[in-house]
Amino acid sequence: MEEYKVELTVNNEKISATAKPEESLLRFLRRNGFTEVKCGCEKGDCGTCTVIMNGKTIKSCITLAMQANGKEVLTVKGLEKTKIGQKLQESFVRHGAVQCGFCTAGMLMAAKGYLDTNPEPDKAEIRKAISGNLCRCTGYKKIVEAIYDVAAENYGLVGDINV
Amino acid sequence: MKGEVNFKVKKIPIEFSINGQKREALVKPNDLLINILREDLHLTGTKYGCGIGECGACTVFLDNEPVLSCLTLAAAVDGKEITTIEGLAKGNKLHPMQVAFLKNAAVQCGFCTPGMILTAIALLKENPSPTEEEIKDYMRGNICRCTGYVQIVKAIKACAEGGENESI
Amino acid sequence: MNQFKYISSKTKEEVLKILEQEKSEACIVAGCSNVLPYIKDRKLPAKLLLNISDIEELNYVKKSEDEIYIGAGTTISDLINSKIIKEECNVLYQAAEQFADPTIRNSATIGGNLADASPAADVAPPLLVLDAVLKVESIDGKREIPLKDFFVGPRKTVLHDDEMITNIKIKNYPINKNGCFIKLGLRQAMAISVATIAMVLEVEKNRVKDVRIAMGSVAPIPLRLFKTEEFLKSKEISDDLIKEAIQKVREEVKPIGDVRASAEYRRYVSGILFKRAFKKLTD
Image (cartoon, rainbow over the protein chains, first blue to last red):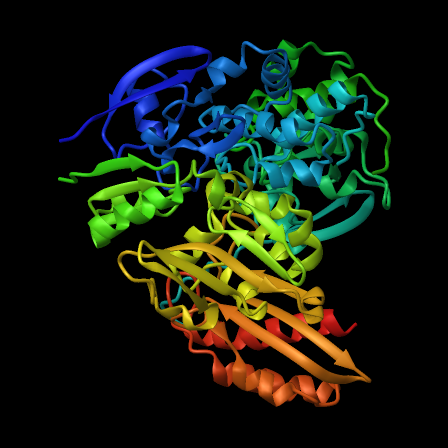
């Protein structure tokens, strides 16, 4: 069994470890203690494994650990140290957008990734942005409104919550 | 014919008002209010959930008091006023509680919603400014499988605080 | 037990050298959005995972005089963000916007979608109607393969073991500007297509001057509907024409039934998609 050296930065922390060539970044992260990245479907559908790598939002279950070599990865534990991360978390809780919580980490990363590219989304754009993340509990509406609230607050839009 | 026992059930005539309309009916002694509402009057907004008085989905107002229609005999509503979820809106204008539920994402599948709304209206009549604890306590007879309740409590609080536009 | 090796390449030359040595033992990986599920299902016969996602020289959208070049390593998100794609090959832009979901689009590449050669590959129908030509390279040289000759069966292409797609060339015909892509899936996002249609159309004096139609998920390969195109050319546009063309479409597609839809449904809905696309382009 061949294992290769992988060196990357996760949440600003330098990680040096080994990985099998066929190992997914998801499994690698969880194996190295980053269990905040959730394992859902492991085939790229549910989005619970969403992280941000070198500024790109990706699904870590369909990315090779080796492909993260030399890169910077942000998980939800890194996100919550930032102002936008805290705002998103608080907004999610306030809107009841966290029920069982399993999809939440992925949703927050997808939200953050999207707001980085488009700080003034409308609700349709937010729905599109999280269309790669599945939630079994909330019916999505609360999640969309939680993200919208943060965008609206941050960028001075009128926070009218339409039905 | 000889040998046959006659089990003819004597039906009971009742008079009541439903959402402001006077109605008459002939009901069997063991008929339940929920079935009269849903099957005879075709008012299917009142939901049949558990049938044993635990989920609250069948809640209606009887003389302005919330009751579980799955545990109410039809015969017992003679001379009374019934309000169902269908009786809340005035034409196109929704009741403020309905607006609050919609605005606060308190409706997912919607099955518990009619019961929730009626119970909540009864709560605010009794206690116009309930705390979160008081809301949760009063609403404990209405179960929801979807929302996690946070938004329902929020909606009721929002309605209590007023300012809910009656139209959407 | 999977015993893989891994190499991350920085240049195209290096990739071609390795392909020459390893042939079918090597599997080129970029976004990995299909490859990792294959590995999990033990469906990947290759032994070497050859990562090309960091090769800058494969990721570009360029426009010359009358041709557009897309690097095989260009991600679907990059296609959406490209002004050239949006303006010059809008039918490809429309497909990119409906491809998988926004997160997967950040990783998935146009070359990967073609090389994987699923009959449901969403970039294929638009590229077919754009008459795309693939540049395919090996250490020995290069060749050009028109996309319509590229697919030979589900997940089967004419690529040799030691070859890789390096870019996709699209000639800038005026007809390319009037294009429509419609995707029918069981969800509005993250859906494997039930049926897709791409169409570009040129109309002159209410007659079909030129038309190109391609469909996905309704045949063993992404399909150009040459017979329907022939039927439509130079005909006057009318409701009757559309009715007849719908029949032609339904005769030309070769769908199968699977978990997503029955063959009958796919055949029927192919006609509907044709009508919708045609009407959109003629209104």
